[in-house]
Image 1 (cartoon, rainbow, N blue to C red):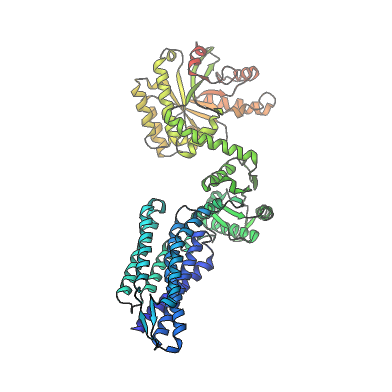
Image 2 (cartoon, rainbow, N blue to C red):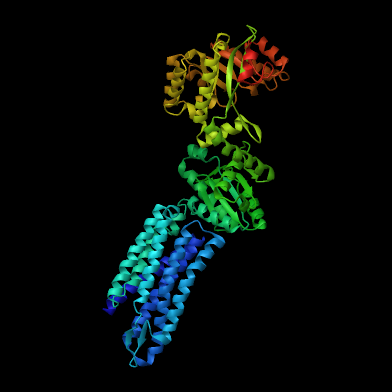
Length: 635
């Protein structure tokens, strides 16, 4: 029987040593949960080790070794008291407690554990748990079952705590903890019924193995391609550092041309470049705190400004040179964002959003750029955060406004069409730039809802002012890429027009160059649906950098707006003027109505008139005005 028990105990000991080795060697679980888990494994090893030693010494039943056996067995009982406490600490570390709050929880639960430890220690004189007769034979004490009751109560309390806080822990962790409870209770129960079967240590080993494989596997937090930390571990690790309020500094590296490299050279080359970048970052920093957050973004952490400066300069040098893969030299530039004292941002989500903001404000470049998270950029980020929060309120309460900018016809001398433009006013900051709130709405997936609300407002305005439609041809309404390419959205707009009993030829939807270049089935269905009911199409922002004549020919546009950027320099530079004139001539010969955007001066207007441009939109004639003023402007 003893040999059988030792087989299980030896197996458990070997397993736990291997688990501790892998957990410590990988250094992946450096947060508080990982440290407690390592302590838990170590206590499990000591528990089994002293279980084996005390069993061997009791089996010898030698009177001369009685005191040593008694001490060994006492230590074993102390380990049995500490293991449940360590497990309770482990459970608390899975929850959102941090810093002093977590330490206070540990102290609270250690009080009953300390009482038990003192009781076990007193057994050296009292013999209430166990004692040895003069011949060295082991005997159970009057309170022998007390240890089993203590362990059972501790496990029961831990189980109840997990039930009460299962939403905070999460379903996955909750079920894993209950696997541990079941294994522990079964093994403790068997040994309580027949104490000669030493299964408690083996059950402990099985439970810890389950935790290792499911919750604390260090290899699960490693990016397989680059051998850096992954995003999951970054979120855990950074949240803990933020709660500790210890200073740390961060460098984000975005290799923004990864898609181009994958397209031109293949994904295998792109993977090799990512591996080289990861190795380069590791050599620069000598730090294990390097994370791959997304497919093309790495984050490197430092704890001193001196190390931060060193790493920043090293990363800039890394991307100054070309990378070599399969004998080819490949340029692989990056956007490097530096954030000092990242702990001041207080939340991991805010920190990641700030990095995203810094990347978004980086100018277009073919070389590597450094964007420093200074006070000015931080203020800009805070501003966008506030606008994003307000955006939810504005959508729920429909606080947006529609402004209308008229288009003037030089031939008739009248305004003949209107463009509907979304506007938003913040109660504290005043008017919000459309580029800001529309960009935020597109990122958050709210642009379609805003567009739908605004289109209903436009239709309501037309219904209430149908006399305007006798003076102008149509109202132009902008559709963002996410709106137009969203399945079923075009039909929703058509249904709104029907709901207000309006004529479809009152409307012309403006499509940007960006959408037109991404021609696909959804776009084709939307355009077909509009044309079938009589809604016109206008290509917006032509010449801003994406479209070409091939794009124009793909879709049945009736009007084309020339982007205001094309006007820059036409009064001073004959070549620019000639370029603009030729574009007008070509498009007019193809049968399109041409609208010149951004006209601000009389000189620009007269030059456009010489080139045969009839439709003018810009501040020279009228800025965008609110609903209540547009009627006066038209009249």
